[in-house]
Length: 108
View 1 (cartoon, helix red, strand yellow):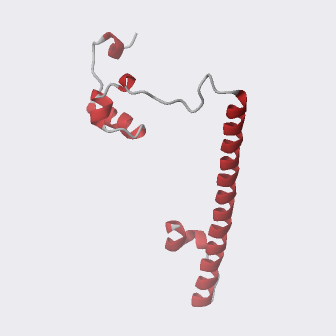
View 2: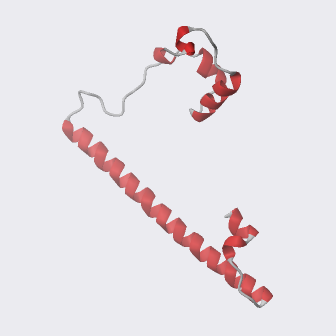
View 3: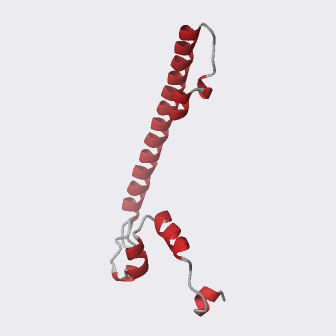
């Protein structure tokens, strides 16, 4: 067993802060709140009919596909913006420069 579990040592405050940030919970809630006292509503209950679970699964798949599509569209737009930046730099300086090296491209 670890020293934490045996009560021989306490975690450092910096570690507790990192853990609370990771789980996006305030340090007060992390240290003081009884999380077992809160009722957590499950996404799908055990008594839900299979059709409900299947419908929920299909809805989640649709959301994931839509998210993936949005990411692809945004990646294409970023690519076009980088090309535009390169073209603008070329027009301005009369030479081609790499858009990935620019401050503007790095800000994107």
